[in-house]
Amino acid sequence: MKARNAIIGASAGIATGFLVKRQLDRYQTITPEKALKQAKESFKKEGPISGSWIYMKPEEIEKDGLMYNTYRGGVTRNIDGASQQYEFYIDIDTGAIIDSIETAS
Image (cartoon, rainbow, N blue to C red; front, side):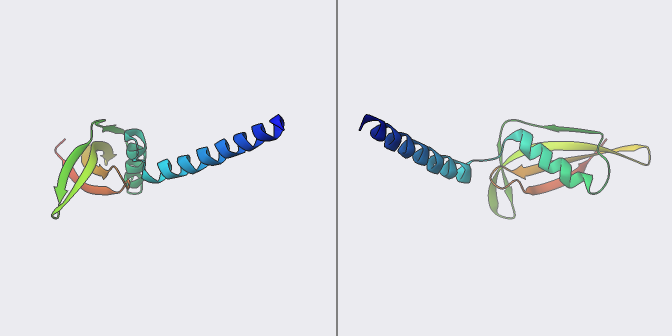
């Protein structure tokens, strides 16, 4: 009888843990490292990247009348021997690039 109760208890614990993890994954925001990786993949579609950075502290920005929680970062690309720098804002919740601008080298 004790073994049966232990098996039932362990099964219930595993099932509960699985459900809780699923819910946490649904509402978890992306990390700065993952945000930078996604941004670099987007910029690499236009050409090679020679450097990148990201601020770890989230910032709130307004774009087209909407407020977004974002990470701010940048990438550097060498095009025809000249460095071009781009700054971007990436949404913490979705990983989408909200805004991207070319900055002075």
